[in-house]
Image 1 (spheres, rainbow over the protein chains, first blue to last red):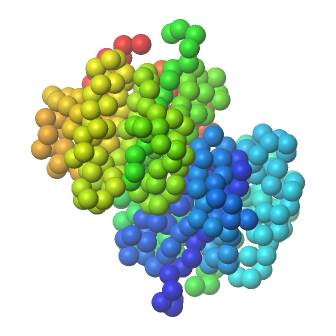
Image 2 (image 1 turned 30 degrees about the horizontal axis):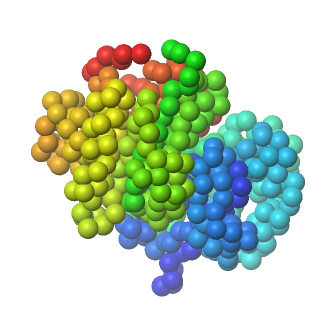
Length: 209
Length: 209
């Protein structure tokens, strides 16, 4: 690992689920505060200053999507339909999936929370790969080329997926453990007073750090 | 219960912990979407439009603190010192504790997450009452007139307190169960894919609904 902290970008879009995005953001930020060589920021495709999440919370965005080491993709509003803000509309529009595919092809670790996994599927990065998503979207994920796995988090090396909403905490803690070490992950877990269950993380791929 | 939905206000201030506030907000919002007679919004003391949370997230505020049925008080930055944004600075300044005391005296249920409990203690509403806070602030809570309880959530009727950060989810789910019914709370728990453990909620007071 070189001297530059690992750059994590959490990709926000209109209708993202609040906890899908804020959970991992806080985990990575806390890891950085506890000595982990990691920095997290919120981004949007075009760097627009503020987005409105699926339950109405308005969240500021730090800048435009860059070339992060880790790209976190929240879900949200999948069942709201493609005419409402959310992951399904972004899947239809295509710009977010294209950006995910680009970052994955240039070496980023891509990690989804909840129905963010459907955006990874649309991007093609789940083709032939083990993956999971929110329980309410599993049938939709099965209709893609992904291989659905029964787990809270699936780590397939350069592609990770998580189940619904709060499983984003487990995804981020698992990535902190992988990238910053188990001690940092344990300290973050304690700080968050979270009941983490690493046994529900299925590792199917090899890390390349 | 009358026809008007239960009004929940989540009180944000500079340096509040992101998940302390966003977790309960999303739980109550989801409960409302699932048929619970509850509405949630974010507020600040003066209604200022945006606050910056303890890990740097900028969050919009829906308006000024009103007269909610339930006032949720997040923690954050307790150990950052009283010259940095956060709960300790708000405890020193006094306006937030005064507002908490006022709302409690006029009949609101007051519920804290994490070191928001220290703001309740400063407000005097924990005098002689069982309570909990983030593990890192338990010694400070013991130095007040509160009676510290070993629990994830303490429900003392019109005053509820939770442990650190993610225990705010348990607090909010418990309140949803109490105010909207167990079925709604179960549906929200399933939607959030959260490992809720109601056995870690200690009920010491009587609900007055």
